[in-house]
Image 1 (tube, rainbow, N blue to C red):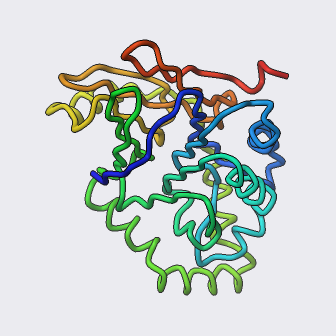
Image 2: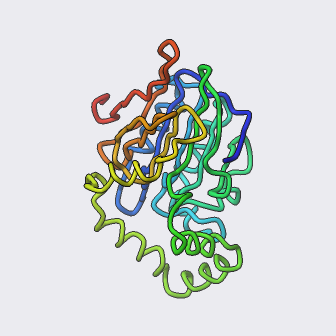
Length: 249
C-alpha cells in the first residue's frame, strides 16, 4: 500500500483499459480527451488506471511515436487539471514520456491510497497481486536493460514485438464476462482490505462487491462500449457513475 496526499474530488473522471491503438484506426479515446481538454466534460481531475494504450513502453521510442497525438493531449489536459496515471501491464516506464504535471504511479506503488468525502480509497490497475510467474514477467519487462535490448530487437525486426502485441489484442474480446470472477474476488478480499473502497480495472468486468470492511469496484474497460466514470459524492458515499461516450454524440 502506497500512501499519498491526493484528495479525490467530486466530478473526477476515471478511465481504464482504453487499449488505444492508432493502427486500428481508433478515435474514441482521443474524442473523450478532447472533450475534457475543452471543458465540454468539466472535471477537476483525470485518473487513468492503466492500459490506456495497447502498447506504450518507456525505452521503446517507437511506441510513443505511434501514440503521439494522445500523449500530447494528455499533457495538454495536465496544464489545467490534475492528472494521475497508474501504470498498467500495457503502459509502463511512463516517466520517459510524461515529465511534467502528471503524477505517475508504477506497479510498485500500487495499490495507491487516497482520500475523499471522508473515505479512504485504494486505487490500482489491478495486476499488482498476480501470481509469482506473472510478477516475475512484469518485473523483467519493466527492467531498463531488458527494454533496451527489446527496443533494438524490435527495430531490427520491423517492430515484430509491437506487431505481436497488436495481433494478440485483436483476438481478445474486451467485453467478455468471466464466470470465475465472483469466486476470484471473494478469495482476493477474504480478509477485507485496508481502505473503505477498492477500485481497479484490468479485468474489464464492470462489477462491484461488498466484502467485510470495504467495497470493491472493478471499473469497466473504455475499450468496451467507450465507458468512463464520473465521481459523485452522495452524503457519505462515493459513486462511480458510468458514462458512455457513444451515447453523448
